[in-house]
Length: 209
Image (cartoon, rainbow, N blue to C red; front, side, top):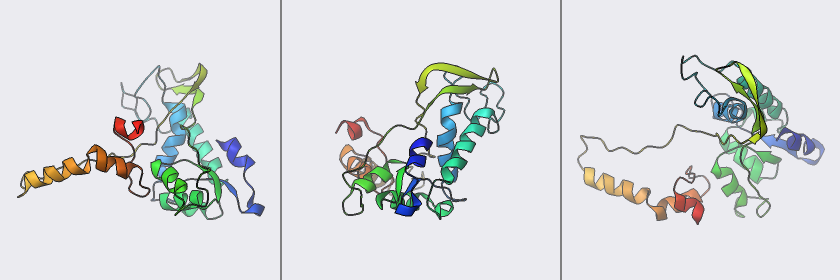
């Protein structure tokens, strides 16, 4: 990921390597998480990315997290001059505007970049799983585990979306009918391919179609 960004770092041509949400107070920590995931999601000790599941000790300062942070910092130096002020919206604009060669993000980035009404690079957009690693920190043994191949770590998590109807609501059935419509395959399927909706694929039908 960083090699590609460095290769395309050509400010004299108005092109930079990458764009991520670097702005403090924005979506910064999710993008940092996506770097750390490759070095902290160890299949030999699952569930230990954020906390040791046996002791609940926070893992934020272990060597895996530190390596992820080092890469995140490197990425921040391969973006446009104002990249430290980027939130996710600016990331999408930079990608669709052809300012950067690549990015990390949710599904909106690819959808917007593929839309000829919003993008200068429509028809020239590809996507890939987040980079993984063949060396992953083991929070239990306190050592790096070496694997025969690169293990993907598709972690770009968010808090998740939930819909609830208040118990004291006056029109509960109508509210549930709305929920059913909103999350139906047809409506949610359209939302998943609409840039800016914030809806990423979550039904099998979203990726089968």
